[in-house]
Length: 330
Ligand code: DGY
Image (cartoon, rainbow, N blue to C red; front, side, top):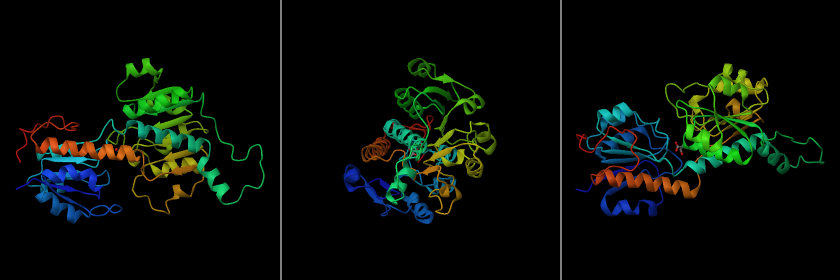
């Protein structure tokens, strides 16, 4: 019997064609709705491999249901949607898609920063709505980006790629990270700071830290109150690192000037969420890595990881490093 692969979202046929030659492959046939939990539970029972999305919760209940599962290939660099201890207990390899999305995500992060500081979305709407009656000196005037101070919280690969872009704008670069990155400090002139220092000094605070127990709820009202009143906050990592009520308060009371958000506590965000009513917020639907080229590369990497594991080889981008094909009891 051919190994069985379940894919939790409709992907282009040409992307999965290589899998179809060797394996039995089934996909959730919808592009715009996640697979319901009961279907996922039924599919994982039969599956040798799952190809999942960031919007799927692969928790203990799902992993315990699996009888043959060897790999979960998550089509994202983040893997906070997967219960790693439960995967370890069940001998399942967890893979992600690092590197291939670094530049694309950094581009979007920088685009958000530019959009908020130069009021691009607000200005575009103003023009399209026919509100532009006359040129005037301070019409939709925003803030400069060049020569300002950028503070990056979470100096991983995407953080470094954002710092590279910022260097082109001759920005001063601060960063905070669990571990110092001397090679990036040397290469890009980034300066390591405590979190407290960074939030006080930066004109732009960009969060790129992964969601962990330590980073959950890291940006509270108290944190925003310590930022400059002119500060702009950008979040392109995960929603739960921010206390959204605190952010809303900070934005309406002028504690900070604006925010650019690609991620939210609950996704998709409700259309009537208070943050969406603010002119000084640019909100995007979690599209950090969403270029056609990069999403294709992410799918290909996820597929390559599945093929490797099902062929008894080491996957290319394993998250749970203690996993080996021989410790897999399934
Ligand atoms: C990731 O890769 O973690 C993104 O958030 C989803 O594209």
